[in-house]
Image 1 (cartoon, rainbow, N blue to C red):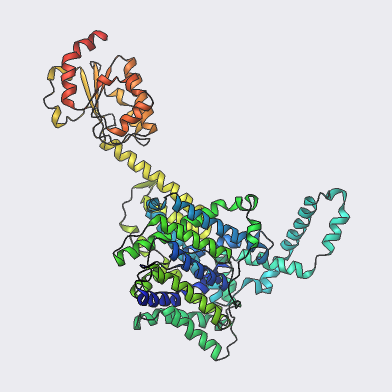
Image 2 (cartoon, helix red, strand yellow):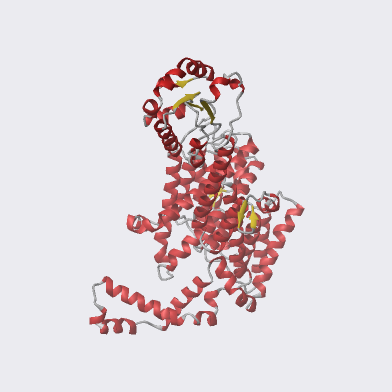
Length: 624
């Protein structure tokens, strides 16, 4: 604890400043997620405090972030749609998924997988981050225009026929669950249908309308209607917010421009008594745990969302550890990745219990903390406490913030989160992939695939598909390079190594020397299996030089076994030179040594092998 309180003044100032910076973003991310500003605040409070307390990066400030909110938005919308559009009904399941994601993060840290996160290819991360920016931009255009599909009567009325079908379908499902045979008892179905009111149909129509306009693609579909029904006051509030955020940065960066924009534009809206749309009411009082999620936490309820929860966990891990690297560079320290994942998991788990949205290490807030004097875990804990104090003391005031102001803040977040570095590099990357008449960079293809699929289809699946494509392309490249550099391809003539220059001319027709200069794995096995085509008819023995073959996988092992079996059938003796530890271990496991290559035919050096051949070549010829 002595280290925790070694920099109280700096940590207090850094934590308070970071907490103030986090306030508008927490509110905005909460509204954007679909659970309201309170969920964003709760997430910021608990994740900031507990991720700092248990994490492995001393100066990290954690809370809801753009990537985590974008994925959460999709999860929340899907679960709400599957629960008749009722947020309260869906909330326990939503929070259960968030809790599961937190638990998975703890598991990643305990298993020591933090160090492997860095192996996720850059094109996948780049495409995903740019997609997050595009999604935030497109989904915030509607509220910045003051257009809400659920409140557009003409748009909602279009869905009334479908709403009636959905209601009838739900009635039939209820009857099936109760064991009522519909075809034998139409009266019960008619009786239940007659109880359906216009209000029920309207509510279901509003749910369908909101679902139709959800996500990036949905926002684009209803954009023409939004432009026809612009609320100019809301648009001015959003544009004013954006203008202040970018303009104030040019004056000074000592005060967070997002906070200035929030205070100024909210003050104008409230002070002049404008008829604007406020955010949802933020409840006063200390956060209360939602104990209902523990009764929901069952394998049946959770199983459909396991992959989604894992995606959230992995995304949070990547987001946090990237921020940890930034913090390391600024403070000249070294974070503990696995401990950081445990801390993030604990923070997200506790936040879920209290109804908060998930989050991760936040780069901007972490940088603000460090530049303001934060050096220990205490700074992150103070940031969480600061937000709690704001919640308890200023909740009713915060409830008056215009929704358009938060939409404006999120638009600047969307613009800022896109990976411009990756986008700028597109023209300069080598076009190493040919698709019909088109040539393009494989990295660009991966990035664009992830970008488009994430934006217009599914964030979760897009990342998985991107990883698979990137992995397959990487395997092909490595396989091609290995086959080229390791001489596994069927060359007509092997180029002699330095220590082979003195090899007797009289033996060259009878002994074929094969060089392996790299790993023998599944990407290069097909070329290696053509080895027999290289061997001249006069050869009595083959020397396979493996001193530069550092690694062999199971595919390579069985390919080697097949080649050795073929050579044995042809009466050709095989000698191995310079066999390294890992390949030797693998060969011994499946008895290639000693069944196909005896111990006396394995040599440490080419000189020893040459000496043995000179002494035993006649014996080899006799065996043939």
